[in-house]
Amino acid sequence: MPKGHVIGLGKSGVAAARLLKQQGWEVVLSDRNTSANLQKQQQELATEQITVELGYSLELDSSDLPQLIVVSPGVPWDIPELVKARELGIETIGEMELAWRYLQPVPWVAITGTNGKTTTTSLIAAIFQTAGLDAPACGNIGYAACEVVLAPKRPDWIIGEISSYQIESSSSLAPRIGVWTTFTPDHLSRHKTLENYYNIKASLLRNSEIQVFNGDDVYLNKLGLSHWPDAYWTSIKGKDFLIGDKGFYIEDGWVVEKLTATSTPEAIIEVSALRMVGEHNQQNLLMSVAAARLAGIDPAAISRAISEFPGVPHRLEHICTWQGIDFINDSKATNYDAAEVGLASVKSPVILIAGGEAKAGDDTGWMAQIKAKAAAVLLIGDAAPTFAQRLQELRYTNYEIVETMDRAVPRAAELAQNNQAAVVLLSPACASFDQYANFEQRGDRFRQLCLEWVGNS
Image (cartoon, rainbow, N blue to C red; front, side):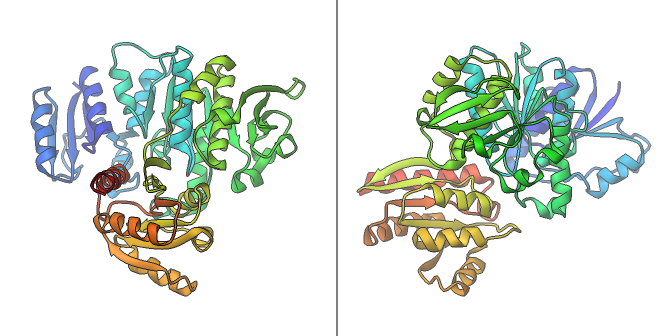
């Protein structure tokens, strides 16, 4: 019986272990952490004959080596254990690659990019599903890819949100349609250089049969046709800003498609059908319509799906309105670019809640938005002192270090009243790991506190 070792006891790792077990492998699943929750999972998986080792890092010194190592998305690709495994000739792949090996006959839409992935993926999945297709969203959102393999029925399409971590460990993944939403510096602590980060993303698009690019993204726009001559480009600025002679653009309030160099442009859907605010969401709309049309989906189904689409939790999610003040959860803004977009998309003046575990990157645009739109800034988490110093340098003094979300929400409500602010916005510009397990947990806590505040007021 072949031996497989899965690293990481998250949703992806568990699904990969179950898939290998189903395929006749002897499976060990390991995680370097240990907790009551992980121990509970350990006991559950033991009943499925899957061995779980907690507080354990893979050791490759024994003669009893695995034939295959499967890595969860959160595990760095270059940790010493994996470098050594590859040197020893042990096949080492990501969970997404394992799923691809079983799902190759199904056409994929794969969405990558620094920001905009989740909204675009959710919108594409909603369109395909409204058109009557079995098209689960998986990868970074929805199901783990291996969960889709384990489902009783093979889907019609797979809509995958795929991070650079997942691309890095999935060399043969070749989607029918690849979508690249944006490109800005992120995850550099893992990928080291911008060039390396770009090349990882680009490898997915090179493997894609059909390519869709956001032509309004500054970095991607600069590369243009010289790098991607056959791609479909999008632009919210109109036909004159379209790169090349085919693509999708906005004109007179409509999404317009031009599928070939010689075809007549055709209006598909009114932009106003989309309920989400902000130019970035119009870009997400264009890329979603592009993917759907290139997959042959009828404009009527696209129109119905978009008009019914509620938006994505934690991305400019409207929580409630209290005394004319909108409380908006943008916890998914985990870097400066996303937080800049968040601020640009809401009415001003704003009371901004920001901070967490800071990431490397250029904060210039975000700081400019703060100066333009924020009546006050409340700082939480590890980054609070650094952000305070940065604001001070820019002569922005209306900030307070409040440290926790529990203090931030009531103080934000008070400041919003005092400043006639239109919005209280959680848009952290940071990862959440200093205080929360993930950005979802952070956003859920913000939502809970806002609703409690309104309920008690």
